[in-house]
Image (spheres, helix red, strand yellow):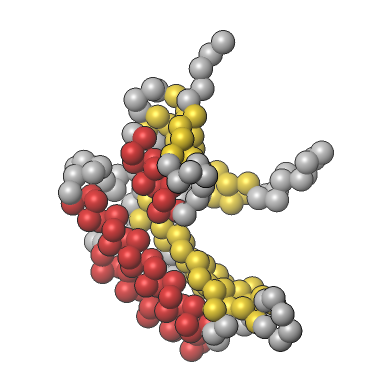
Amino acid sequence: MNINVRGKNTEVTPALRDYVEKRVGKITRYFNNIGPGEPSVVLTVAKGKGDNVVMHIVEVTVPVNGMLFRAQESTNDMYSSIDLVSSKMEKQIEKYKTRIMKGARGKNAFKAEFAPIVGEPVVGEFEVARTKRFAIRPMGVDEAIMEMNLLNHDFYLFFNADEDVMSVVYRRKAGDYGLLVPRMR
């Protein structure tokens, strides 16, 4: 498996690259086929709060046959961050595979393609810092909530198979979920 390792404000040394490939490569044991796209790891060194505090941030994104798994961790040591993020990713994937085995998504669990494409930012009256394009497939509300939680986002846009329209699920401040379904006037 080929892992795309990039560094922001830091140089990716061969030893660091090998460590990332070893730790993040472990997640492949959960799947027969990783699918379209390749796993990407971004290693960032950023200034933290306070004097002489340096944060080492590791962000891992893995497209797996229709799903996108993402995790991020930051500590004051790059190797610790890599260990924590790979553990978090393994737990996410294990949790998801358990749900699939119990029949939460049915037989065709990993059929669709869902690998986001990052486009050029659009500049206008309001500056758009980032544009993402992705393939959308029909799914139920429960599946959309599960994908939103796996991505660790507060909302998720999907094609609602029950209503036959584009819909949005979101996490409410109370901790439960909301659903936005458009209707024609």
